[in-house]
Length: 91
Image (cartoon, rainbow, N blue to C red):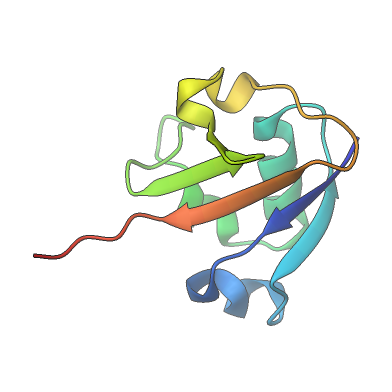
């Protein structure tokens, strides 16, 4: 499945400045692993040592946080959009 991944500004230096990247994958996890394979270094920013999403990284599939779906195992359909959104803290 061809999936578009929207890249936040903070990670665009790893994608050559691209704000969107198209990758292949049938699940969110496969798509993000393909993103890291195409643009090395992104994976260490997205995944912790256990291979799970870092707590400060949010990934949305069609406006839904994947943590409230099936996490990295969430199926993706051809043409869907994943958005990587870093958490914002402040006070």
